[in-house]
Length: 211
Image 1 (tube, rainbow, N blue to C red):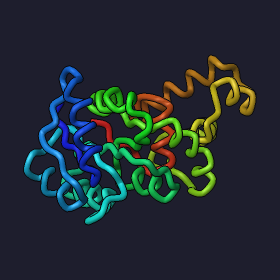
Image 2: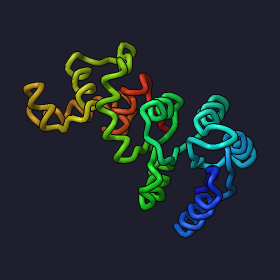
Image 3: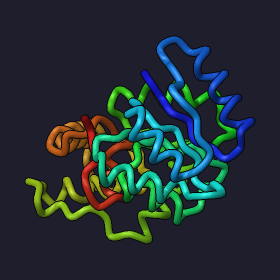
Image 4: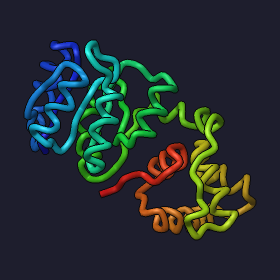
């Protein structure tokens, strides 16, 4: 896969480039240091994935990501940052990014890139831990356009709140097997792959873009 790295810390860019190019199948086409450079480099190279920081001097990664995705909805953008502010997470989800990772977890970056390349959305453990609380701040997806029963809608909400199949079974007075069957049917209806994408779908208020 061909990627571009954008971070205003040149040492971070160099380190990431060295680490990722040691991985089989990953090629770093270019690096940049701010949002406008990210937009320019994306237009020039059309990478498979843009790996980008959020807070950068000279132009926000979120602003750049929004601009790129407006012109190229198919773009795969993975944010890599030291911050997991609710505002940043929500905006990253809303604009349609493919993931949000925390820089300290270096070992997760290459697997995350491969997961994004395969069509998944990837969010770090710290971010996933915030999703249930963020769910309390947002109404969630409008499911009226989908053929969903009330139990399916309730199950989606519970998955988004972070409950396990066993916990959902207890809340809804169902067997775990029935919960699994409902979940499989919901994922198929929405064209999603897993529980993470389902939670992201609900939080964004729209479908996850899956190629």
